[in-house]
Image: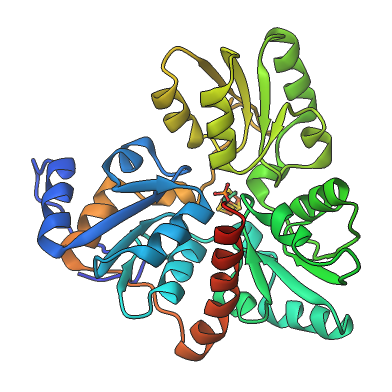
Length: 326
Ligand code: 13P
Ligand code: SF4
């Protein structure tokens, strides 16, 4: 058995009922499975908890189980590990990165902070542990606007790494935060022309957009929000059709919660595919999850000094969110 490729590369006995075995191993190992809404549907269905980035961090901080299997991408595993340093945090594929987190190398972000002294540093949760360690308060797409607004209006703020989310918050709050120039390859890719065409074909449909999308997409939205906020809107809305401009994994839970409603994925620019998958999120599979539980690997580790510094801004986010009832 090796984890050289980022996941446990061990043969699986023929005929194994993976779903059944994952449930059994989870009990045997005292583990809890957390999954992000962008995971494959079959993984979301096996999870004890599904949620957006904020919910996963909130849940991780309160768990009593000593083993957390985080089905998501690496920064989510690191966030759980920093919040729960004494727990074992496993992830089915350690190479599940994030293009947005990668667009903000810690050394370059540190130089940006030094070049702009006197600024409060607010970082999106989609960042490495090292970037979090340079940060005053972490935010997610569920609480970013409210956390920015919790600072006095004249507070000079650096916001990183997502320029689209940063621009969206600047435009909705009237702030002029200094933005790091990063982006997510999945959300940047949505085609304005294809979205306009989908709206023409489905004139009754409400358009749901994640704030990591470009402004040209955001301005076409009926609702802009985190995955959890878009899901809540879909559940509570009287509308029966929705065009969804975020990673297509969210459609699984939307369809499950609203079996009579129609969800249409918005399409990316350069693709014949009608939907938009995050290749990192989709690296996790039932096979990898099974081997993760069986061999208790691969484990997420964060160097203790970085974890100590990075935990504070995450805890600050959780405290502010609790006060704000988020
Ligand atoms: P949420 O904060 O909505 O979970 O989004 C996470 C993410 O990776 C968006 O691309
Ligand atoms: Fe990162 Fe984008 Fe994938 Fe979210 S969808 S994990 S921001 S690459």
